[in-house]
Image 1 (cartoon, rainbow, N blue to C red):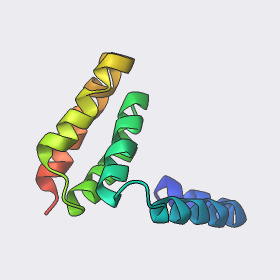
Image 2: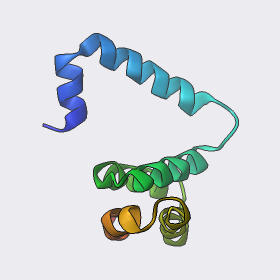
Image 3: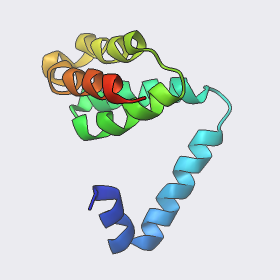
Length: 101
């Protein structure tokens, strides 16, 4: 079972509120959906969260993100966080990008 399914099972009211927040953020007009995914990928890479990278790279690609955009989004974290995010997330990101249709 993935972590979100556990979250939804164990805390359904909190999960529903979280889902509402996510939906509101998706609808905010300031950035297009692809750019929002790239920002999320950059933040998660800076945190070294390769699990989130796995899922959000797929979403970004489906929204039209190129391999180079994914790569550069993760590489830019070097100037803020050093090698941790690049080392832990770039291989996962490029692998899942290449495997996503």
